[in-house]
Amino acid sequence: MAGAGDFAHSARSPPPLPLAGRSSRSHEGGLGRAGTVTQIQSPLLRPSMVAVAVANKLRHRNVWQQGNKTTQVPVRVVARPYSYSQIPSKSIFDLARNEFRCLKRKDLIETLAKKIPAGSIRFGCHIVAIHEDPDTHGAVLTSVDGSTIRAKVLIGCDGTNSVVAKYLGLSVPKTFPITVLRGFTRYQHGHPFETEFLRLREDDFFLGRMPITDNMVHFFVGMLNASQGSTTDYESAVKDLALQKLKELPTEVADMIRDSEPGSLNVVTKLWYRPLCQVAFGAFQKGAVTVAGDAMHAIGPFIGQGGAAGLEDAVVFARALSRADAEYITERRLRVTRLSLESFAVGVLMHTKLSVAKLACKAILALLGTHSLGHTNYDCGRL
Image (cartoon, rainbow, N blue to C red):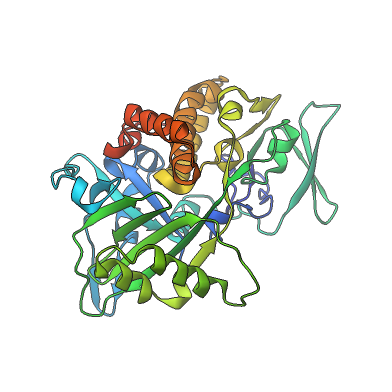
């Protein structure tokens, strides 16, 4: 498996499998970055997490340690699509049926890695080229240092700048003209917010806010791309721009951005997505070579499903291998096409100035149930 995240996995544990370099998916940040988070939405901390037997461990990993005190916050979900006053207070998921958690990506990766036999992970193996082996019809991978690896089966999990996707003939993903500021804010004496996931969207920005503990909140602000200019502190400049955009909102929102931890701030200027036509009709398989995760279906971060969809891929692919069938692509295509359409509509709605396009996007989102987070009500099945 050519994995661009932090590990690769072999079910039978032959020689260590390589990492095909780092993902270039800018809006994800580094997978080991302390401030990077993954939002896992849907019943039972995602059925995919249950399937790979790590859900119970991760339920405790989203707890932030504060001295000798451990605080865990159950999170309700409130979708606020336009303004504070337009959303009924009852649009909350029943936590008895659904879980919504914000996980540190580092915790997710480490928990999954512990389930893999020792020696199955090899770091620093950047794959730069792939060609077909004329003898076995398998794939031959060439790393940056010139060494080669012969693979009977190759699963490209190498992100948006995927070498495996290029081998399959897929084009480079496109980007939204949107800048995102992400970070954490710590409240020494406790934050004033409800335990809810707030999503607020206006014409030229969107805001997300989710408490992680009683004292820490995760937030993100998306805006139309700002000129980087010549400033040497671009993160501070984007933060100031965000404060200008949010000045009409309640002071608690501006205070959250203003008082954020400087070391946690992360500015992303390229939000990658694979065009919908490729997701719906693209060739994701060539012989014994296929793709998964961002390499297959990169989507914008607007609906918080990128990481979850990658985990679904893993479960469905493992199930297909166990049955010795080739239904992986067929089974995944409808699901990832729906997610791609939904994320694309949200992104276009934010930056387009065409009334017809805005109307079309709103109709799509209403049909897909975006405001009620209908995309999270999905079960990828069991292994």
